[in-house]
Length: 336
Image: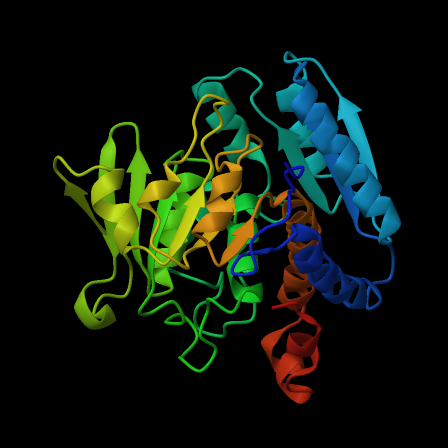
């Protein structure tokens, strides 16, 4: 009997996130060349979570490899609030990331709100979250010169779908997922629900699956609505919605969860954003494209967000009259 192999069938392509990360990092490096000094990201670690420390170490490595400055500040829970406030007013600090959970309750939400919006590299402040759910894409909707910051992991998923050509660039910006039906397994406030909202705001019909049930995110028939609406599907389960979907994105953090790949339609695109392997190897028998992890893209998106914060401040510092003298100059520097 021949030895089993780990190679996927010819019908399934396994796409590693490093390919997307490499494309994005080249864009970021071009943006860094336009700056007077290396962007400075400060990370605050106030817990003993080994996963948080590993993420911080990955972030530092990626920063240093690409011309960014990174400082990790390990502080106590008693000092974290004051430390964030000090960093808000420190002109040497361009961006702030806080490694959660710290208190693992509403106090963490409070800490998210005291990070200055101009240094909020994770896009967790109320203004960014409000704009995301309301489908407001710019801090200055009239001039459209300052793009909003989006949470890193949801945005990393979107960048992967763009790389896989799930987004239809022939369609108008904001409608490019029209015609796609997507299932997101996980409805956490950190990743799952923001991701479902972003995908629906881009035109997809999204089924959001959680332990509490299934919700449908959509902008209505023919994308008639400006922002997504949510409908609870009473009694619906994964068995009802997964076979309808051409894209399935899963991010359940428990190691016991395994996605039932028998529910997949043939040729579906599958993405795993959990640190756990939600899909077993049998996913390759049904999927046409499979992305087993997205971590490398998430860290590059973090740097991309930091660059955008600096560019937004640069635009904000320019008076409208001066900006009109050289149309397009500043816009050309902004990473899109």
